[in-house]
Amino acid sequence: MIVWLNTNSAPITNISLNSSGKVINVFVAEVGDIYFGYTLNSTSGIQKLTSNLTNSDSVMEICPRCYDIFIDKDNNIYCSIDDQHKILRKSLNDKLDPIQIIAGTGNAGSTSNMLSTPNGIFVDTNLDLYVADHRNNRIQLFHEGQLNGITVAGSGSLNITIMLNRPTGIVLDGNRYLFIVDYSNNRIVRNGPNEFYCLFGCNGSGPADNQLSTPRSMAFDSFGNIYVVDDANHRIQKFHLISNSCSKLN
Image 1 (cartoon, helix red, strand yellow):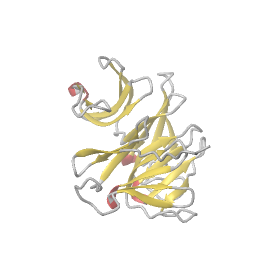
Image 2 (cartoon, helix red, strand yellow):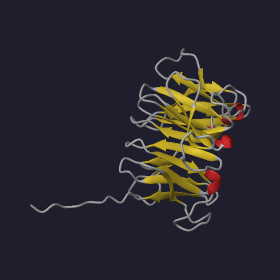
Image 3 (cartoon, one colour):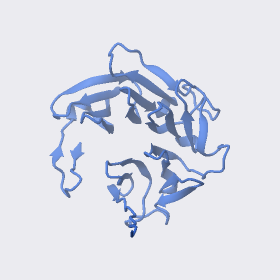
């Protein structure tokens, strides 16, 4: 696991996690703790690496792998299991808290209560769950406590949105706009006040600075910049936020 500071062109830390097998995904909590999904032999799970980067502890042990993980404001951890078409949740405040299925039935399907190879997940401050429903070519929203989802983008949406092709990631920003990693379309799309539109990778697949090739996931930093895992190009792309400013003469 390699760590860069925002202003550095070279990594500042290289964390060896050989004892944990293959690292699948990473989530950094606000306090600096690092959670990562792993596979080791025939088992999979999630481990926590404390902010001093020295001690690790098992958080969840399961047989199938977690494609993506997320931690909400109430310190619940979520795991999307793509092979079993469901989303799990467990409290981090109590190790004895049972693992719950909060979305999907365990079988692939396209009805409102089903998922097909769920990938990226995001939970907002209302504890509403957004899922990149990969093989259904849609983004599903599950309100807290509801097992039936609402299609907010892609195939089957009640409102006109945008056609997606195997989405893998979903992020909601502070203004509640959706940012979607549209994997097989090699782009990042977002919604505005009135419509969805392409944001990055709008010129087709490729290695140029304004292109992507099968992007996997994205994230914001605290400055509003966007980082994209550009899978087939073997790189992390950073897109800078350019703020508009205007002055008023008195």
